[in-house]
Length: 440
View (cartoon, rainbow, N blue to C red):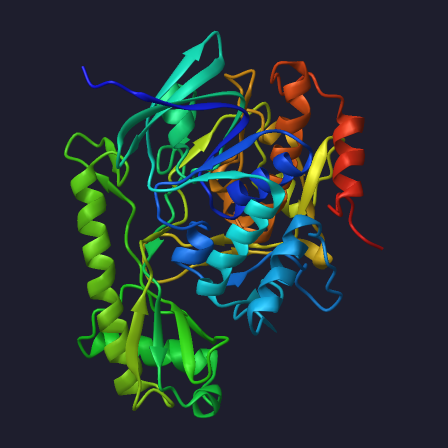
């Protein structure tokens, strides 16, 4: 048997360093808990640095836009501004103002914030096992370049995006596609040497019409209403266009996701890159401003919108979102529309009326089957439709801030996440700049 290193015992262990996990670790450490953050990648940020370049969800959409996310997420944006340009721009589909950044700068921004907060960072480490007793995670095992290593903790936060921590722990979850159609995946890419002024003269409707025409002419374009946008780099455009299915229906009608079959995930990564080249060919051939451009930069990995969603003490629903439901235990707000990237050529949208915002309850972050585990980011407890709204990165950051706060406070009571009075959680979040109620 291979011996296992012991990498230590921490108050709070955060698995996954995307926008949710990084904010969770920062919040935890700032409150004095010894905090470790772990990621399989060689950099911090997950989707925020490996796939995308824009934070959505800081503002509600509509004519009376309201800022509904603050605190640590503001620290992230302010740190980015010290490193280079940051742009605020409207969303193509009316999802509210986005904050566009340089992903390479964000890698460094995340690292600086984590280190300055006192977080211990462990990269190049893939979760392998979770040791659970009576609903309590005692320790985890990760695979490192030096071999298998054990890590112990009082409180744990599942910020893996795919609910890997909960999956290995045996906690209950819904697999994408089981109850509702699963959202698709996207390989993003950047185009350089674009005449952005000329590109601006071509409307969204004209772009989508040209996609339909190109598909009829033989271009392999699964999605016919993708988008492109300016970046912080002159004459460079970023895209959200490709569409890769995340599930297969097997012969026995069983659903197989990219997380069930390693070969399926590998094939999907390859197919996403091939698609990106085809969409780039379309842009160069058919869209004004792209005539002299070239593809330069593919996303580090596929952008997965939906895979596993953990069952928490509460599941946020479609009705909650569209009715702008408020909760007694809400720890964040979301004004983003339901954005369902289903299989096929289009995308379904449903908007919260009157620039409203739904509350995100703490109960949706409390893993139902565990006494010391919280879940944040796109694997939090919600139905398919509600998840398609609240998975925006600003909401992931807000959820992370709340979970890190709860986990840190819980270490004073052996890590039990339900032993912390909500009034204490609320006052701590508000004092740190988090926004829990819709501004007037």
